[in-house]
Length: 593
Image (cartoon, rainbow, N blue to C red; front, side, top):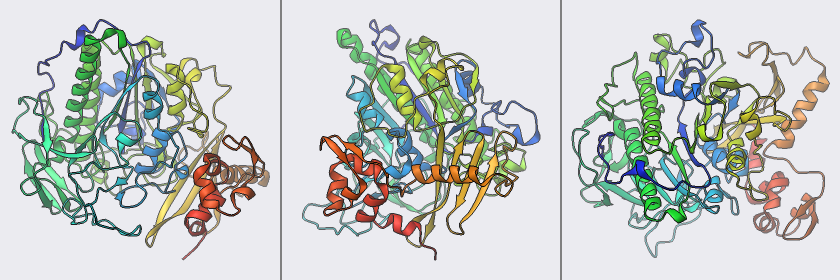
């Protein structure tokens, strides 16, 4: 995989762009499995559980020059969070309530018909949009002409590239390019699952020149020769040009796949995108456009395979007490590289930078065990970790920096916000209107970002859902809601409840469900049901294309599936009715094996 020295001379005088876009640029740096205590100073105390081992000076600098959020939340897992971020919706408004994790022959990606991503909305308002890195929202496998594949047919995950049914000389459908990203360079599932290969704008590509150092010239990617450039990777460790590459899940990929190079490749691809973008401005300053860059990192998801050296020669592997911590260190180096390139290109002042993570940190008893042994706990005082309904599963670091927009420097906000809220917030900041019936679970905190006292229109509640695998399907295992300081958890499979006051019990140690007025629990539970995946509105609502009000009963009459698919209001207001008519998800949700 191609790595270019970060400080190599570029062919475009990027720092000399003469015309600035009217709207600010946007860059979202989306880390993977980075918990709140992975960032030093997040908890601002010195207890043993709240000390990060890795100093992370670049992220700390981002926090000191921007505004951070101490109560920001994702979903408990990766794929659902990516949909939430890009759609502005709760995860169950997508095709699969538990998220779309894999490519398929059927529906494609997680977005429902007529749903618009933030990339699409920004693109329609003059932005140049780009994505690099981990996609993890599904897609439709290109198939051989004339081959009929049933809707229930399953892909061969290990042999996805050479399966006789598939034709990867064609571009894949329902990827980033189909939801508004004009350019993209992605892997379907980061570094964790096959296929271990990149797709550029939907087409599978490999690098045609692999070197053992970081000083090679940029080489364009070319179409794949499947006979010589695709191989099967068994589980194991492999000595590659940039370090010890790791394969946890066996499967096919590029012969040059090197998991240690992944994040560095994303840095180089982002630099190339910015170079190209600023070159276009220099050639046509009268039509200058802002950019939206979505950088979706592989770190710190397993397998932990830090590079021996970073792009500038900085040693990485073996620097801290575990491979997990070494990759965490690399994430900070990546943030530093991205900030440095924005500054040297003279566009940092005009760029809104967001740093956050897709879910909570890794568990001390599992993927981060070695880190815990040297005193590092990814969630600090929070209970549990990624994939759980507790705070350690979904509370994430979040920082927003925008020097040109006068975002306060070094301040912290304490009201709870969600990844879905970034959609409306960013649109507000750049002066783009969110289309009607889009980002329906996104509440802008743009004014609160600028002024802590402007807190009147923040969200009242925030919901979370944890799906567990039962047989071949995902079913709702737990759900919770946050309202004020209270957090109610509903355990579906045994119908029990947990209630915590987070202002006095951030670690969720004392269940107060039996110690409070039952009215409080009832109100919280009503809110869970109202915002949850299987709920029908009791009141009529306006259907735009019908130019009149309708009810969920109307959506549940003849041709229910067609009505839900045809009118976007159906899936917004009648999630139970629409789900029961088109899929078994709500039925399975209430089943107990």
